[in-house]
Length: 93
Image (spheres, rainbow, N blue to C red):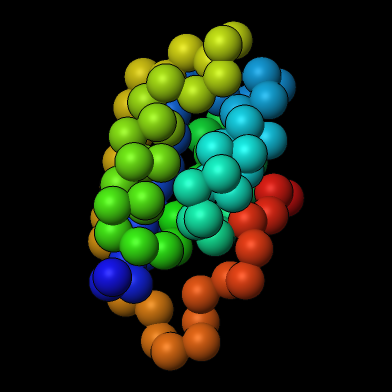
């Protein structure tokens, strides 16, 4: 399978609603590594790395998020990672 990486910036009510932790759980269940961090402007930035189909499934889930989230926008971009640059786990910051 292809190694695939997407960086997403998620807008809406996504801070203070367990969005990062829920994203971490979903990613780990799918075998996807990366991170989810709060940005100063109220968005959450997410890096997803793994098999293309798994990354795309988690990226699609970002529109839903946990029950208390209200996602209004998910901006994604494919990124190229050098060999060995992908994280070994999914972390939240």
